[in-house]
Image 1 (cartoon, rainbow, N blue to C red):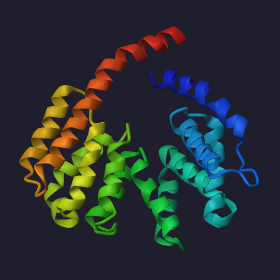
Image 2 (image 1 turned 120 degrees about the vertical axis):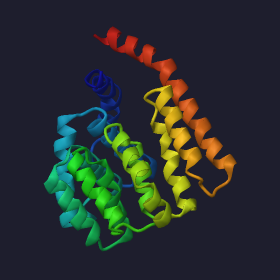
Image 3 (image 1 turned 180 degrees about the horizontal axis):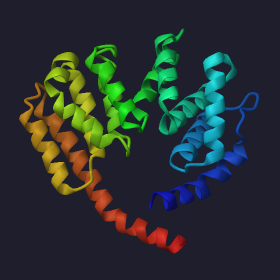
Length: 242
């Protein structure tokens, strides 16, 4: 159903992007610039728009040569799109750009894209950067949380977390771990899997307030309920589109 969903995304969002244009105008409000970035990102990733994806690849090439030539919201959107569709060459370029970035903003933009690559081998290379402590302990939890938000990567990321829990607990610390596991709200394939996730975390002996963990579990349950309630309606909507 993902292809049908992509059609719906394009039908809804493409007119809005056409209306505001691909390029920023002089004295344009910041909210419009932010909206443009969100529209480009959604169309390139959720909408799988080939023209947007091609333009994102071109934009990233320009951005790497000279960041000043690319408006920030467009640059961020382009990076996220290329990560989603990228190959080994793109991954290596992103790692290089992260390591050689001249500003913290550029560093974070390329680093944040690494857990978005779909190729399992590239995802494993991202994991290795954490295990080798090449990624800072205060940054790693947020990157793994972003990986948990990825439809294509979330289960692999969760497997990595559970298999390396002892290392991550020691390297990140409990305060950062709780931020990372907030991403489990995206692991909603079934009520059984939700129960397994909650059992694992209950047994992990996190040294944080039980109320904080319970709030995460509550949000996870709400997300699962929403998915179960709306999946049939969404399926019917796609049938009507057909």
